[in-house]
Amino acid sequence: MKIIVCVKQVPDAKDVRLDPKTNTLSREGVESIMNPFDRHALEAAVVLKEQYCGTVTAITMGPPQAEETLRDAVACGADHGVLVSDRAFAGADTWATSYTLAKAIEKLGEFDLIICGKQAIDGDTAQVGPGLAQRLDIPYVAYARKITECVDGTIRLERLMDDGYDEIEMEMPALMTVVKEINEPRVPSLKGKMKAKKMQATVLSAADIGAAPELLGLQGSNTQVVKVFSPHFSADKCMLAGTTDEMVDQLLAKLDKLL
Amino acid sequence: MIVDVARQITAEKIIPQRAELDEKEEFPTEILRDIAKADLFGLYIPEEYGGFGGGSFEMVLALEEFSKGCVGIATSFAASALGAYPILVSGSDEMKDKYMPEIASGAKLAAFGLTEANAGSDASGIQTTAVLDGEEWVINGTKQWITNAGDAKIYSIIAITDRDKGPRGASMFVIEDGDPGFSYGVKEKKLGIRASSTRELIFKDCRIPKDRLIGRRGTGFFTVMKTLDLSRPGIASLGVGLGQAALDEAVLYAKQRVQFGKPVISFQAVQHILADMAIQVEAARALVYGTARHIDSGAKEISKESSMCKVMATDMAMKVTTDSVQVLAGHGYMREYPVEKMMRDAKILQIYEGTNQIQRNVIGQALNKEYSRSK
Image (cartoon, rainbow over all chains, first blue to last red):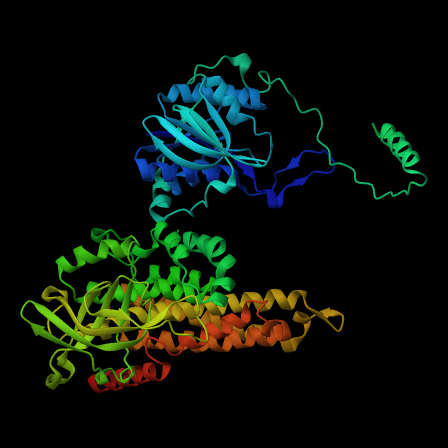
């Protein structure tokens, strides 16, 4: 069984600060970690490998230093790391990212399963996993909380819902994104760390994956960040008085003003 | 690298659970599984048996990290090594082939059985016997206060094989969980290290195959002494880790506790306690690391050094944890803070694997021997 895990290097949420002048993320002195949900995705993949044999390849799109996250992945049980890295990818939104990852995964050849974390803690969009499945034209399940079985090219799993869970059977190749309830990620092993130290990640550039330049990076993105700001919280209070209908009218008028 | 892995397990797995495991006196099965997944059970086991091939120093580093989290859990981990050392020290290649890979992978936990009701410090008081009957040994007797008993699958125990031969009359054996005539006593209730399990090993006409004898017949005491020489720096490192954790808690508390309008760390009375704690922790660490390196260099005579670091680091841990409770004062005495547990856990370090009084005997005898030789 060939499993691909998508991982992302993100700033450690414990230390994230906005630069009050520029309103951009201040990354200086902030430690980078593997997106926590991706650790659950990786653990799910490694457990599947231990159960059914096969390989786990961790893939990430990012700057050269994102290789560190691939080393973490190998230390925790992945067999290999693939770094999709090129200046042309800079500024990509989820649309361009899913395109780039899809091209890279196609380049890697056949696979049975792609596992992603449900979302990254920096962007919080939860779009890249499903977007990637669309690009690759394979079925997907988001928010998987349990893998029940994986036999004869079919995977059975449970999808977390607001009011319970769905039991789903899906033909492979397929993609799933996982929630943190799916498992308890292991800490890196000694042998894994040694393997990670020696690991030479495969590096794929825009040319390597045969991507169309106009679909990459900022240029290929349908959304652009215009402004980042910290929301302003006001402690102003006011009491409404009168009958219920009057108070509702007053409230609506106030809300109207805010919009 | 070893420190990184052990530290992450301590931070993510041990510390969040230690208070509950202590309170419920619950064996840390899941955490030991995490340690196994991280390959640390094989740290001191040669590579040909599936281990990491490290020595005393590697073991000391890992134990120090674990004991910063919980000495009870660290003891369960260390006791498996104590059960494995006799096989490594004196066992045949076949025996090592059979048992070491599963101990190294953490698939099976090991334990060590020496102490009896009338034999602890005085190992010659052993009453458990092993009699050869055809192709089997028949074992009778009871071992007391055995760490990991009931949770381990592999036991290295000592029994008398020829009482009239004195110190050459004892032999060591491997007992497996499930051997006929082998059972466990009830779980003991302890002052500290309550996450670890302690039970009796009960042998009633327990029959085991002849080849479970570790090494040659009559070498039991030799194997035990050699095992303890190797394991004592591990206990010493538990003292170092525990002392460090108690110091960390005390300093952090003293910085934020305000009395008379100032953090209490600004008072010399408190500063001096903290300074003495730090001095002792660092001195003990230096001695333990030095001893571990001495052992790994292949030195033949290690009993004295091994005992010295055990005494010093564990007496230090008792003192430093007590002082830590003093610095935290009322809060320190409450179970809400971790230092009262640290103080309870420290006491056993001065007792098990040879009381600190027995260690001083070993050191004294070694000195006597050394100085007679040099003349």
